[in-house]
Each structure stands twice: as C-alpha cells, then as structure tokens.
Image (cartoon, rainbow, N blue to C red; front, side, top):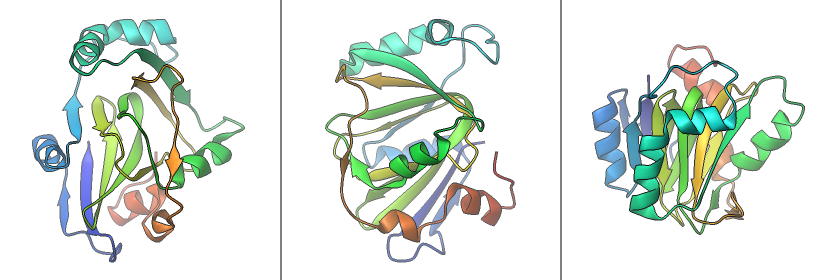
Amino acid sequence: MSWLKVYPDAAPQTPEVETRDAKQIAAILQKLGVRFEQWQAAVQLDAEAGQEEVIAAYSKDIERLKAEKGYQAVDVIRLKADNPKKAELRQKFLNEHRHSEDEVRFFVEGEGLFYLHVGGKVYATLCERGDLISVPDNTPHWFDMGENPQFCAIRLFTNPEGWVANFTGESISARFPTYEQFKLASGQKAA
C-alpha cells in the first residue's frame, strides 16, 4: 500500500502528515505539481517478464502519457537484491538532485521511496506495485531503494539519453529516515 509522510525539512523525526490513502496522496502531491496515479496491467505478467512484455502490458497508459507530455523514450529498470552494483546505485540516488525533465516512474513490482524537498518540507512517498509518480523538472528530490532492492519500474523520458541528474550538493538526505528506517518506524519490515 502506498504511503506518504510529510516532514518539516528541519525536523525529520516527526511527520506532520501521514497517509496511506491513494486519493489523499495524489491530492497532496498534486499541489506540488507531482502526478501520482495507480495503474493496472492489461495482462498478467510473469515475474521475469522482459522489457517488451512489461511495456506492452501498460501500453495504453504509456501512450497516454507520451501524448500528454511529449515523452520520447521508455525503458524498464529491474533491480534485485543480488545486483553486484546495488550499493553503488543506491548511494548515487540517495544524493539530493534535480533533473531538467520530469522523473517518471511506474512500479510494475516491488517498491521504492521518493523524497521530494519542496517549500521547506520533505514529502517521503513510498511507491509500490501499481503506483506511478512523476516528479516535475527542477524539483529537488532523492530516491532510496533500500539495501536489498527488489523492484521493476517503467521509466519515461523526454531526453533520449535517459537519467541525467544535477546534484544540489546539499546533505539533507542524510538527516532523513532511510528506506529501512521509514518502514521500521511504521512497524513494517523492509522489502
């Protein structure tokens, strides 16, 4: 189940808002220009489905977004706990950064935690299977996939080069709960 916790950026211990209601999450994030939706696959996917199969299963929603926003490239990223570069990738995404285009992710399976740093607040958004999040261009954010990532996500880009980050140099991400701490504080085990 999706999850949103909103913290003052100077007080990462106590969220001001906490909800697991998808409609409420979407409404709160919409005020920031962030798109949050839940999608259903057109067909049942195998756990090891390849990029073409995954994209085909969600083609209707992908084409809708491409038409609305002009996305040029679509791919699928799959990270598992046995990936030898998982620590390196996690560290890269944990640093606060911006993009010159929207960061669009749809979680086909698994989960990940996006942190959006906007207007003196941090919006920690746990996205799970079926969740789409689109972080607007130039929005400071970071992403935590956990120590043992387990997710498959569709990514859409306007830039055919794919993921290009402009790091802010801020250390704010180090002050906020990690993926594991976020889940533990809520009485859940990390995936």
